[in-house]
Length: 603
Ligand code: M6R
Image 1 (cartoon, rainbow, N blue to C red):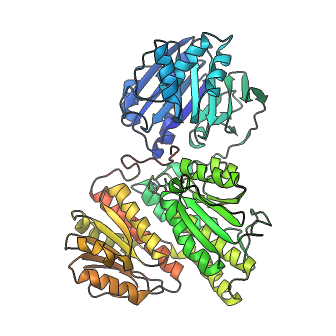
Image 2 (image 1 turned 90 degrees about the horizontal axis):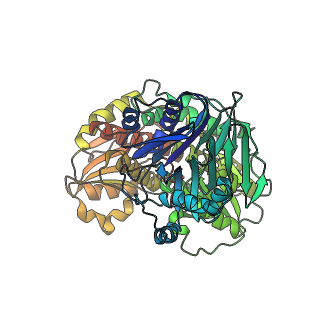
Image 3 (image 1 turned 180 degrees about the vertical axis):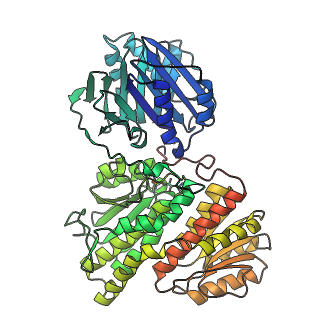
């Protein structure tokens, strides 16, 4: 999704801003651009495709000495990914970069068009720079014009604007899209739409709040909300950049699959004491008066939520609904105060999930975020948060984030079971013992990986995949299918194994690939029957199970079937590696799949 960076200082600005954009590449984008102002002159460059195209375009341009710069990676929402639609957009004197969507851009565009403005692009962003220049005509200062502009916008935005009318300043605004200011001891100032481009440059950061706007110049940070000056609160920025290296793996996604054992250890760290789950981050009274749970999330996080639905009802004995956030928003949901509203998000910036959280908060519900990114918009808005501690995930296709989400939700379900006395002591102890052993069972087995690598060549040319499973293995099947779709671009569907006979079985022939999850600990015989029904109709079947299955065309043997969650996590790794190896054989960009963005900040 779009990324924003900005800089005020004396370094080579082009290099600095291009490198900063490089840190945001993993989020996905289809064009990029920069604008640099020095001694009252602005030079701007844009290019479609990857950043190397922009680097090539700017190779003869230098920008040493004091000045300012802004940069952007665009993920197309309004208008195709062309150079004209790439940011920065410009008026007569000013350049702007923007993340988000301006909802009232059509009204503004009509008003400006009636005043004779001609637009070059199809974007919503271009109207903002022209509106600013229009407001300049009736304002005493550039700041007044910017303030008027911002206050007339509706929608989501993180904006940086520079203008020759007020050289040496960057005007900024934030609403429902993240924007961070950074500073250091050398009096350099930075902007970023996430921490990543600021690490190694800024020492302290200020996470702007919705509705804040202002102007930054070398000596001053002026911050406003609703026409009133507010103070900026800076905090130290951790400087750990180790996530940026692939450490010998071919792709970040591969590295992140292998990291899961370690990061799950982090997820559990300090949260199990004396055979009890301890979640000190939660409000002591969070569960008082709570009789049901509603979980809202998107994509992979939604699959983690679906898995949690099974665990919560089974262990904590609490009614749980799981809803896709983009559906929840407009269904006029009935919300009662005895419901705990849980949102799950890797990035903490997903617009649909964030909006769902706002609806729940406005309805007076208690809220809890399960999130990987501290200080993200979702974390700041929720009453309570449990951080999943996966570390920065660079692969667009989520892997370790999913594993830590499921582990965190399992942890939470045991915690609720403790509070509600919903299961006996022995059951609790066995859950906690298994949970403690999960990190070691998540080590990737090299022989299995190698087998999947070889096997993947047989799964490149069919007419589609069905991933099937029952119970908690159904959300895992959905997740396996999503992983494959995202990075291989092959059609894949996740389906409840028992539901195939109600329709999809009509598709079955030898070119239909079925990946069947056949755990020992959960509905083994029922699932086996469902697989046999497909085998009888000549489907090509890859079975993943601890028990040999004669009718399988291909078979991956799992090792640990002592608990349903051991089986879940072991199969999860196999599905992730299968998707990876198929995508690698197809020659795809595994870390940055086409059309996808790491953090989806538009609705
Ligand atoms: O950051 P979030 O967890 O809120 O993101 C939700 C989805 O956009 C995300 O899980 C998406 O489905 C991933 N590409 C999955 O690999």
